[in-house]
Length: 144
Image 1 (cartoon, rainbow, N blue to C red):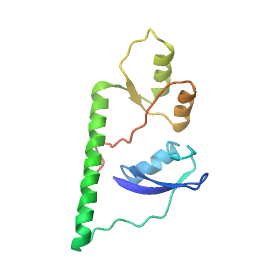
Image 2 (spheres, helix red, strand yellow):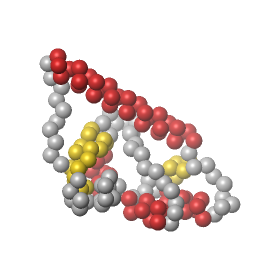
Image 3 (spheres, rainbow, N blue to C red):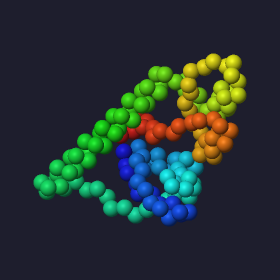
Image 4 (cartoon, one colour):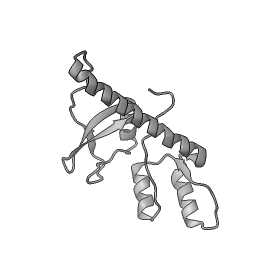
């Protein structure tokens, strides 16, 4: 997991966000899945940030260990959510928006919940149609 300080080019506000890797940040940005927490703009960029370096000084050691343990707990919780989703929802991949509309507009269609992939633009369109969705961070099993 990696934490970046992000800044919105529209409203100039900054916020922190976690990613499973630097490649994941680039992939999400390319797919236009990164948006500002404040104004929902897609013009979000990484800002300069000092790296967290673990050193051998006792004072810093306790706080660094605390942060590492916090990170482990966050990853563990994300993995629990992922496990629940995989076990209880149907994966529809790239057909997420099509399937979401199909379920929403066809009241006779009975299906368990779904999860999959969609761009920010597609999610905005679903929201405008009154179709509720949720986004969660996803940690690939092969990473970290």
